[in-house]
Image 1 (tube, rainbow, N blue to C red):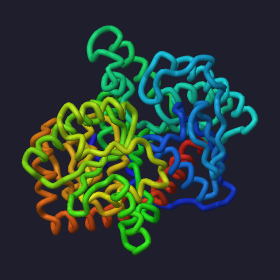
Image 2: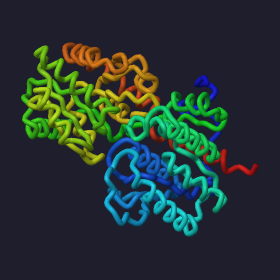
Image 3: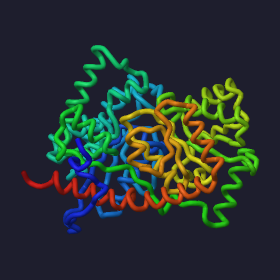
Image 4: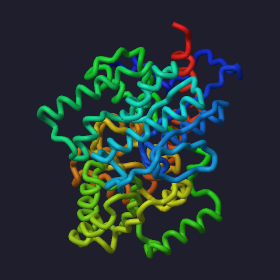
Length: 419
């Protein structure tokens, strides 16, 4: 499917009704421990905020764990009688959590009387598909990657065999429940159209965005002082260049490849320090850094609140995204761009969508080439600075949440029209 065949949020031309009577009551279903300061949680947060800014009423139904945010209306399912073993990725306990979430969503829907059900992730689309028919509200599915691909990435499912085929069939069935699907990339839209045979007119590409008013380059003396305080806290000498990463820590996220690249750079006597922000498996990767002999040059910060991310990113001279999943988005890259950081990434379609010709790419999975590209940027600060400035301009032009909010409104209007 070509980019022209999917309705794209990158070209928001056309009439858009601002009639206040068409503000919607939106029930968002978020089958995750919202809010956890990473990945899909940021997309859920920013979508809810921009919809509220545009005048819609949004209520989020989510798991019992997570961080409450004062500006959002959040309803949580009952807690599990047993402790869940994971915060991230598939697990058998999620079946029970999702059942409790479905009960809570039904209870909230009967009281809230939504005009739109906006479901995130496949579990949310499944729950939303049932609710949509019960309360007669159209379902919009926020597709953020293939369910079976994620299960394979997390090593929860082998990439072949009967179980994989069954999971693939279930995914295809869920993808047919919504009235409309939002995808975070053209690559995901092509997957739905080409592999799952969904009609192009049912799909709108709604790229992840960045809040350019919050994610700002270091510009004033006060913030510069705060950045230096972070550097001092991590005991990073002033002359050392900083390579920064934020996101989940896992093999399919490229964390192992990133550490191998760090080892190669340090073996070349590159005066660099790696600041790794994220979770889970922090202790395991700290041990891995010790095994590689690079622990003195890698700081594992753990999880940081989303509101503090702009400050932490301002530490960096170069940002990296070693993710190797071809079907998932990577919204963090837009935040890198917004703070004016040059970005080294593997050459996969979603990175090309975000970074265009301004990205610095390595062949997928090639740790040596990844290290080479980082070194080239560290050795050429003028090029790095120019790329960072151009990437910020690209974010402000193409990836603003206000534009995305209006694109979501048009989808709501489309699915709400009488048939």
